[in-house]
Length: 313
Image (cartoon, rainbow, N blue to C red; front, side, top):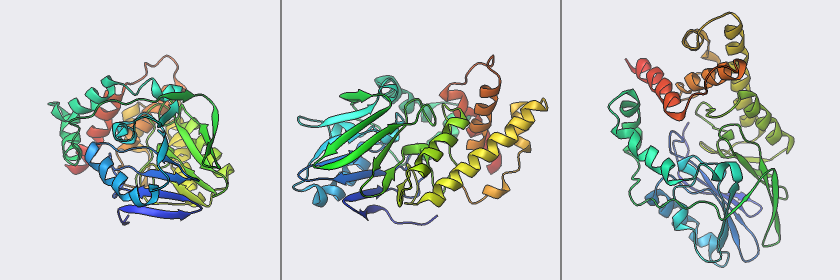
């Protein structure tokens, strides 16, 4: 899916910074400008990309400095650049559940992945080559909340709506009702397949329904180009398809591996990152079998890597 890097004017004082091609680590941010101040939605995976994004926003924030930063969730490509925004007079907000994972350990974990001598390392190294995680100083929220938090950003209403656990433990939507804009974080991927780390998948489907109920004119996904309700429904269709097909295979006694191999995903051939099906099916099995140990991020990456590397062979 082709689109240009850069700031996009969404009208109504809302903007987005899009980072093509929207694949692993290539995430989006948002800017909501009020009277004399602005709110930034997310930072990026490393300092260089975050500096580039902030420089592009600089003409928009002149006279409207960033006073609030909202991190939609705890994946590094949405908060590792926080240190470049933090400072006196700036509050950093995330859900309490997200904040619990925004730690030095999470930074160290991502730095270590490309150095592994296994399929995970082999899969991650070409992705990691686009980023430089040197110099990341974990900069977590200064304010947390649960459920919902309404903000006044220079006279503009901005609603933070917690919909996690879904993609991660503490996903948050950022809704600007006056402008009919929703920044979704990684509840929505456009161009690439959705990914459910925490789940369950049913919670991600419910989060999509929550977005659609807001009737946004513009949706800024965590990755990929700007979309609208149709893009959200496409993500929902994928999740519903995987949930339905994996549930049927669980009932038939198939293993996770057999389910992954047998589900027909040709209706979603237009989506990249197809290996995410491996983590998503595993998530369905975990929801259906309460006795099954929950997979950690490393095992999820391992299954995705095995799928993707097998597809290249």
